Image 1 (spheres, rainbow, N blue to C red):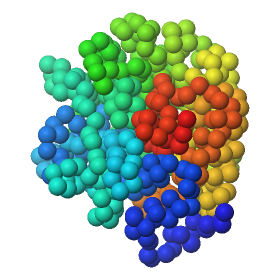
Image 2: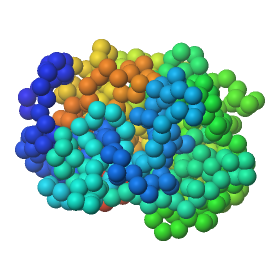
Image 3: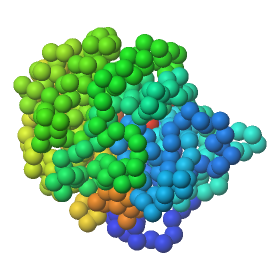
Image 4: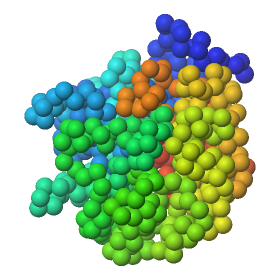
Length: 454
């Protein structure tokens, strides 16, 4: 396969239409399900909604202007609102995940995460009374919106919405309840954020804009909502697991260290709902003694995200993680956690495409694929289950918006590499955190890794 120079791709003034580029890649990768190729193209470009597609969307997520304000999601664009008074802020409510199917390519039902991106060639429109996603104005697939959880519209007496404390990943992990326990992050506070991440800048913007939902979620209130979610939701929104995540604290937050902080939420929730449902801790890589503290509470999985594999890029892309823990120690902690929690219960995420970000990253697609594949093989060979999510530049991050979308070829090839490596080591499927595998079955909306095959 020819080597493609990323800088050459980005220097060109004329890009093919969505229809042309999809057809090119269908031909180049005939063994890859078309669902993977279409999904990755939508993810890397983001999408928009036409106004007439947002009728009866009161139960969905709130997006301010060109951005999403979601209680669980880490990435939000709020910078365009800074000069506006609260009463002037325009907002919409819209699904944050879509299911696409049919269309000219006969797609099987495929879940796609919404990255609301002004100027995207992809747009959800209403055509002949049906919801359709179009690329450059050409229909690509039919669209179905996910169901709305019943608790979504409920609130405490003071007006705090339940959904501002606990959210269901309906459409990404449709049955995973998520709590962003804290939006404070040591890496941002110390001027060492991961370069793709706008987590800390979102927290700062929220404070400046007077957004009312708490930056540190009240433990008792979280437990209250979790009890309602797990005992009252039914049907397609019934949760099967839950995820606790948030910023990393190097200094004590509210008098406790990072491990004790998250352990408090885990214990409070388990006291309410028991140990029937597994917990996922999406936190910093921890030494074995801390993992044992979490494991003593009951069924637990760990997801400590490396973000990028290459040993030279890790300290560049993730300077805070490199300084506080270090790449080699991060890997040792992941592997060591498998001895306690078991294979398949220890995960890490790679931000697919950030290793191509200039001026830091690889200039050749093949080099980036090779690096990521090396990481997948090493980790899976030790029982660690990596996942991928597609990188899309966030305005509040160091990398900002100055990059073109991640090359489609790269995303297809790393999806193939993930699936082939998974088959090589035959690890347990990542159902607790990401749902089932296979085209037409996968509900993992942020990447095509689980749509390749099973």
